[in-house]
Length: 503
Image 1: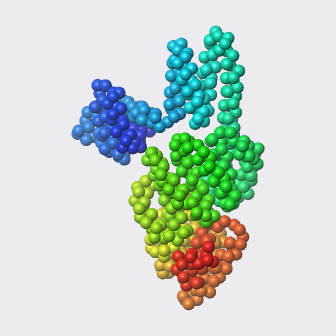
Image 2: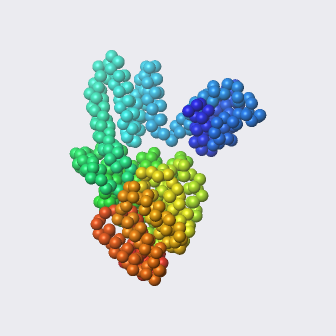
Image 3: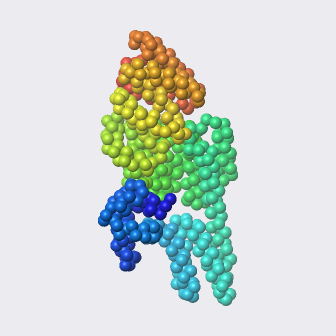
């Protein structure tokens, strides 16, 4: 990326507060030509999102053209320095690294008493937040410092120092081993929602069978304990063993809550740990403390804007799903209305999983409310999304869901063409039992009188029951069961969900 492009990209990520801080910082740290740098910054900021450097052709920007490459490079570095200064107070690790530099400066000036005082403070603070890499650096500096002193009394400290180094190294190695297990879980599953391949399940069993994964007591650091719980909870969730996953996710939150300082330092990770528990509870239809956990996430403050937007997407999705499943449909609609514009404006900050999951759940909301046109509008966001392995289950079932919506809207002529297109497209990857049952039902409905539909809906209901008895996780099966059951019973979909037999 050329220097102008890099500068554009960096400025585009700045929050209003960071921009204001930069202008103050530049005014203090640039002498002589400060106006040119701030002018260049302001010119690019005003052309936020513009591509190329066409803004330099504006007559009022003529003074910025001269020596642009040099000025752009200097401004880029100046912004990075400003961000370092701005985030210094919010980053204990940066403060500790700065203390390391100061300790070495004091040692170089033979100010050993001052260096010792700062060294002890650094060790205490680093240990409190488990910054073991920085602790190890500090211990190594102290060891080298002692070794250079011709003082037998001080040399007696070396065995204890070596012992502390060994202790820190053991903790780092222990944490690293558990983190590697977590990485292997991620690589084995490649961010899938469900596991259905023997080799994937075998890989997970091998990871869980490792000695370090047998007892939480083997995890000796905060990060190690967090990863240890995540590995077990995530693995069981992927295998649809949600009841086994739940205790690990609850224990995960207990680990966080026992370390409030870590919550303050890693709010996004803490929020995502709550999300993991909520997803598990949703799978178990356990909603007792759902709203309390949502409120906890919403209460987190001072998140970076991209992180805040990403969490808004995820939490809004969970809120909508919660209100659908507790049949508070009007409340779910209010949540959608309140957040839709914000989410649409910030969808570039979130991953495909959030976009696809959220769009599907909104389509499901309007399906349950029997506003089929609105459901179709949200479903089209999925159907028009580029094909990807991410949430392939959502993308695939959405093709079937689209056909069901067309039946409800009475678009029989369109449906005949769409059925043929869908069947042809799915043959390339193989049609699963649910898809086969849906296609068979809809093929009958578009060619038979409405008076005969009940026969085919009853057959469809029986086919869905047979699929459910196999125990295989099939995305969309439950939605189709509720839909056809409501039609057989003569209820609305929402009323059918309220029936005891539907729960």
